[in-house]
Image 1: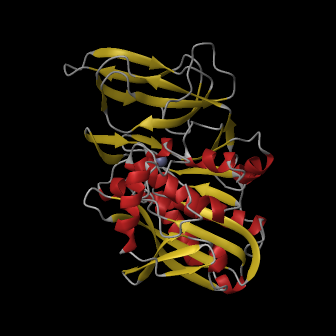
Image 2 (image 1 turned 30 degrees about the vertical axis):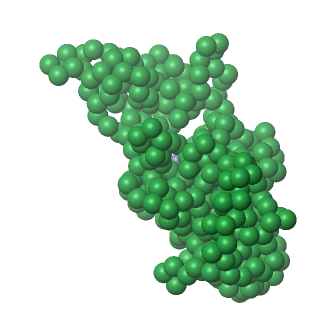
Image 3 (image 1 turned 180 degrees about the vertical axis):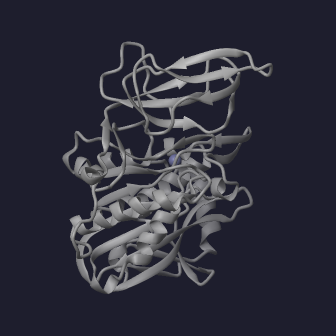
Length: 385
Ligand SMILES: [Zn+2]
């Protein structure tokens, strides 16, 4: 929680009073170097970038790009995880658009989309601001994996996109990291937010967007991207774009193809879509480019998984974005002798939305998910990922 009345008692304060007293003493040596408005500069400069522990982009000079580090939670060696932040602050007031990436550590194309958008901006001709937060789950990014390797009982792999809006006093480092980011950087500086992702290691997706289209402004956002699929859903509890939306900040989750790689062909439509968002809100000038109408976006309100019932090697009989029919055989699975051990059928009429890219699987894994447009039957579960 913020400590408005205790400016030198920072996040290392604890709920228990005796510990809080210790924390005050420990922090006294780490003087907060400068405070302007709501922004707190720690006094550190790393790689030539100033470090902040709270940011109010209203404090930043207009007509410029600002490169900063946000001070996140501490690592097990006591050093804070620094998160890279770029703010393009327009010369005139206007909407504040936030672009986030790296909540999962193996999703490279999402980071590149945000970098390319920021490169294309000229703050001197902008109204409003664009804030990019590029490498949110640093420990996961350092090891090119989806989840944060948290020092719990041994190493627990924690999915940071189930932790939002976080808790500064939470029971894990990623929960606290999420709380710090959400309370001190993201929520106070955002009117609209796009949280970029990709598929994950072993499970590939094409170009699609997740967003709850029952919210008019979210529906508008999903339509501004020239992509092939939209999943009309609030998704799961704890995801960042839903935490934004729940806080009154309309938000969507663009998914930019496969994990681990840069895919220029899929990056391009997401850069175009993001520029469309900035044009739609008047942050930059120019006509809106291609949208979902031009791309013939397939909008599904449900997604069902095809789950492996046994172990073995899998062969897909369909590709991403293919139309499939309920009951159509979509995957064959074989054992090491080459004998067929399972055949899997589509649970619905729809489109292939994601596909396992590893060619073997244990039972229980998602092999594919089908995006479709009818309510699931009783007992079905939406795609649990
Ligand atoms: Zn992700």
